[in-house]
Image (cartoon, rainbow, N blue to C red):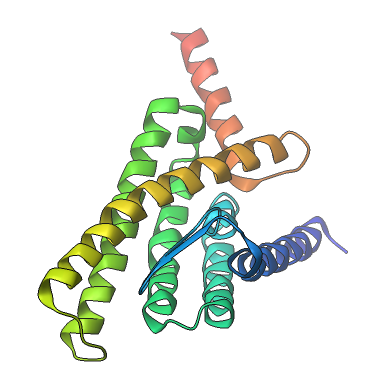
Length: 200
């Protein structure tokens, strides 16, 4: 088996493990808050966010798997739709990291990325909930809906940023022992920067 095939098999196994975690966490995590159609489960984003440091394809695969996890564990359609939004936001984030892997070692830039990702993440989830109610799939008075959207928006932003930092820390530690694509590519960028500094 060639090195490329070995890498593909390894990534497939990692994707399966992250997907399994994505299904398991919403089901067993005790740190969970459910307020009507809003749900906040600590570390529920960690599997899909960890996949971002491997590849966009893996991220998309895990996002679909974690959506199935919420469908199994939480019988609330709006939560399923919010989970499905990870497919678009996290995959886009994974593409950005693939193009700019060096930011994983730049504390300020990675947190700016985290903030922007969180804004789009929470914003898209709030939007999908608004559309769900606006098209009459369920009913809620305007004041309650506004409060719900604010909860999903601001609560989702904080939740997203916490889980991203958990994922970043986890992958940073694991990268010391295993090859994780973004961290490996970041080393290459850092090496090039050092060479430029020396030549200048």
